[in-house]
Amino acid sequence: IKGRRSGDIEKWMHIPQVMRENNLGVMAIQETHLTDELANQFKELFGNRLELFYSPDPLTRNARGVAIVVNKRHFKTEEIKTTEIVPGRAITVELPWHDEQTIKILAIYAPNAPRETKDFWRSVIYKIDESRDLVPDIMVGDFNLVEDAIDRLPSNQDDAQSTEILRELKMKYNLTDGWRKANPDEKAYTWSRDSDGTQSRIDRIYVREDYFDNCADWDINPTPIPSDHDLISAKISTPTSPKIGRGRWAIPTRLIKNRTIRKEIQRLGQEYQSRMERAQNDRATYKPQRILKKFKTQVRETIRAHEKKIQPMLKKRVENLSKKLQETLNN
Image 1 (tube, helix red, strand yellow):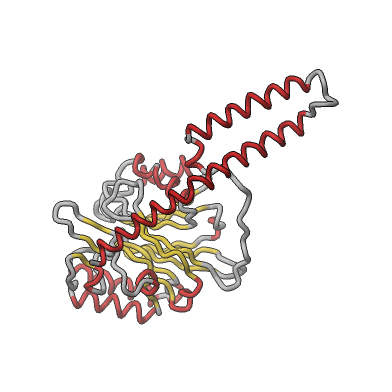
Image 2 (cartoon, helix red, strand yellow):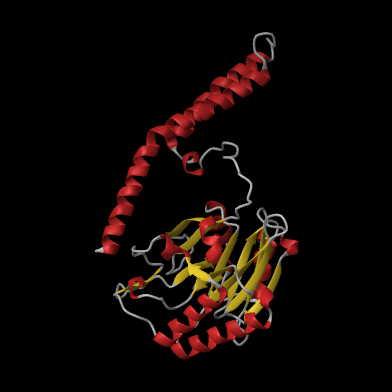
């Protein structure tokens, strides 16, 4: 995701929320405008659950910049290795994965000008080739160019030399554009400019070719973080990953504020509170543990019944909106 105008802690307060709601293990952020002071504030607030790795612009600390945020619930962050590839533009983290495996993620914030772009990609290739330990398994970020005209609206080609050197890097390290491979003919965009309606898919996730079959859910979604870029995401696993179950049931966050649900839970609470009070004088008939268990069961069944009722309507609405969006983009 791109954090334009993110030079204050308020913008960074959204990061944990986005990672939690999207169940993200790793998040790459471009144009961070991240100073050491701001980074320290972030670590003080969220360091117990998130680890921040960043590379600021060497000339102007509150400009450009690239960062990677790692969820401590998913990774042993004390074992992470990080390497600055191009200051303020590219950073690599090597994460412990499954068993003895590691995975290397290269976060990119490429320049816009063609001449700078070519120099940038040459620097990236040179740095990686200096140490083969830096060859990425995943490359993600804002590339500020597209490989094909289909990824721009209006449709047009980017600078040929800049595009070619990016393709050389892809071939050299055996990387593929995951979203495009999963959606060969679709049109979708990650960046837009309101003034003239220009759109492009300049934000992408590349994965190693042999990883692609173990990837799923290539998505482009809006984000609550103030930005002219959308959130791109994918789920990546290994063939040896253990099967993970559905986990314990929890009340969906969106239903906690539902007035109907809250009124019904309050009614149930009052009813079972009365039973608890009666249990003080008649333990033989009213057992507190059983009363509490029945209350929890009633609440769960009430919420599930309500969810079953509204879920089809919400799903239908989302499907209709998605269909209209795809029709608009592809016509």
